[in-house]
Image 1 (cartoon, helix red, strand yellow):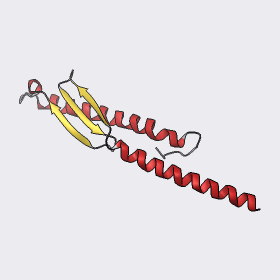
Image 2: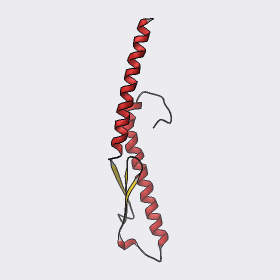
Image 3: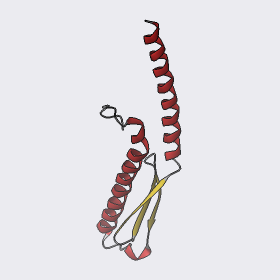
Image 4: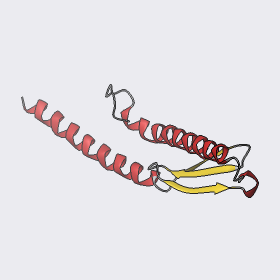
Amino acid sequence: MRGGMGNMGNMMKKMQKMQKEMAKAQEELKDKTVEATAGGGMVTVIANGHKEIMEVIIKEDVVDPEDVEMLQDLVLAATNEALKQVDEMVNASMGKFTQGMNMPGLF
């Protein structure tokens, strides 16, 4: 029976190590950014790995008081693309921790 408890102890140590590595990887994601554009570069959105929008850049040429809707659509499109890229970055970074585990909804 003692062998079973030793295996459990080793497993707990591995889990604790993995938790620390995951926390570090999650913290590092805050410093990583993605950049997405819309309208041929007229609108640029930069987001970090924590899904925080860091910057929105709008070129003056696209600002038309007569067509605010177009500008709104471009900002929305660039923001959604940036958030999609963040999801892909997070999955690539955190996926190494869940490989081989069937844990739906974890990342």
